[in-house]
Image 1 (tube, rainbow, N blue to C red):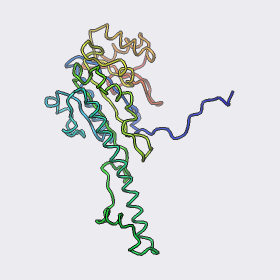
Image 2 (image 1 turned 90 degrees about the horizontal axis):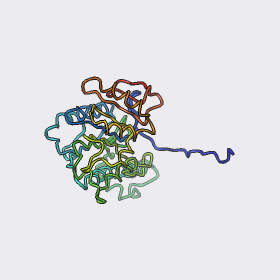
Image 3 (image 1 turned 90 degrees about the vertical axis):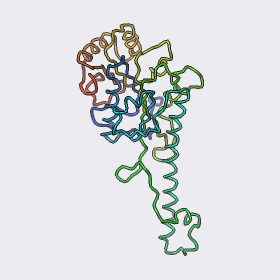
Image 4 (image 1 turned 180 degrees about the vertical axis):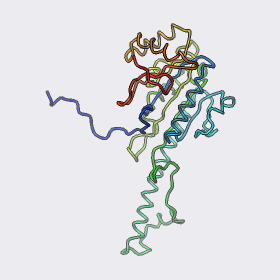
Length: 298
């Protein structure tokens, strides 16, 4: 029977590493909290931790309330051109940004290969100047080596991109229209922005959603997206039906008794929330936390 044993092929995807007690890449994070519970503050802090670890290169913010909440994002790699309104085609715009980064990544490597070929021809003592590729000479007339904006230890790397959707529930961002590619983007997140160089796969995008209600009659977060989440945070709420639904949908990972016990413990402090890490590191002490920093144990 060993002849039928499943063997995984070598060369799997490579994801950015994080500090020992932090979360894995890639991630889809869903944070559920009522107004004024602190979800934007907590998620912006999450982003600041990534930035401190040099694991955040470009932030895309989808929010209609950026102007009043801009202080949360100071010091983060957020260009105002990357602040998008929550519209029916916003997911298309986000994926277009990632695709553009993928093209820039490949274009740099292609140009670097041509640069290296030119240097090889120049160093060849057997080759006369007239024999050097004229197109390469014209392309690098200034004799400047190609540069790339994402370098670490002198080497290019795939940029780490995060989209944060804040205050978007009830907007066209979650429209059920078939024109809306949000569901598609969430399902495809690891594969957005395919590349030919590096690990030969994709730039990918990490996703964060801050919502006030787990379900809603008005353009709520669809179950297809909820099922893709691997980090879930739940703030204090008096909506028992919502908590029961969350517990039910997480039932494959967490039994209801454990969920409610840890939820009460996590939310016993001001602005406390329960974090459930559905893709924990092998070194993680628990898949549950109070906020980001305290492990909880069933």
